[in-house]
Length: 138
Image 1 (tube, rainbow, N blue to C red):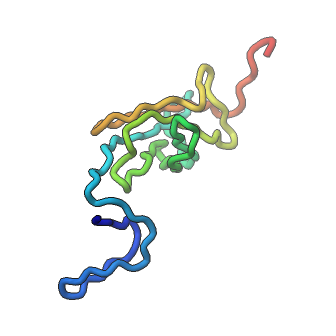
Image 2: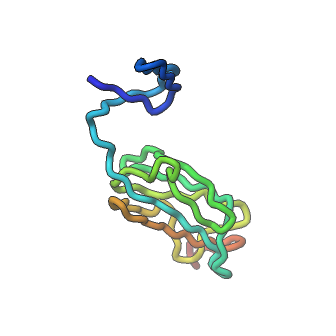
């Protein structure tokens, strides 16, 4: 059975291929899983300007943390862009609300996201600078 390794060093000597530092191996005969792109956008609700350096976590539907990123200065980010995207399935995106902000009125955390093969799906979060007063009676 042919095996491949995602991490490690390859050394070719003539027609001999040596694999060193093997970290994870799999079956070369199995096709790569189909991928899609999962992006986020975090903006200030008053100015609609992106909020940078916000920690975002992508969870599988079973609750396993799958990927993390910090938004760039313009408030955007893409999960696993270096891997070509993420496996097509349902996820949940959670934002760690940065100091000095709260969720904007009507906004929720833990947003569902469905990744579709070959497409980009963006989840947007709106933040309010400062704290939002609880609703009356709440």
